[in-house]
Image (spheres, rainbow, N blue to C red):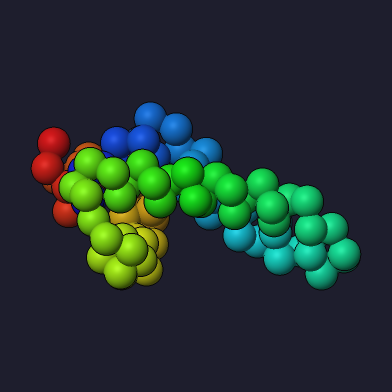
Length: 88
């Protein structure tokens, strides 16, 4: 799953959504739920991208994504895949 996850986020770092989490919270605090809808839709697309190759069930993919923040951080820093727990 790490390989399926890091490939799309390495190619499209905007999928990391790290700034998106803060932006959503700030916008929703002001009553704007449109940004949150877009960010959540992107996260669900990423979830499907990760789930499909290994054929993981909902519980497995949820557990993986719950532990994926270190992968996000290392990818955002530009570290190679072998340093992120994924095979090159």
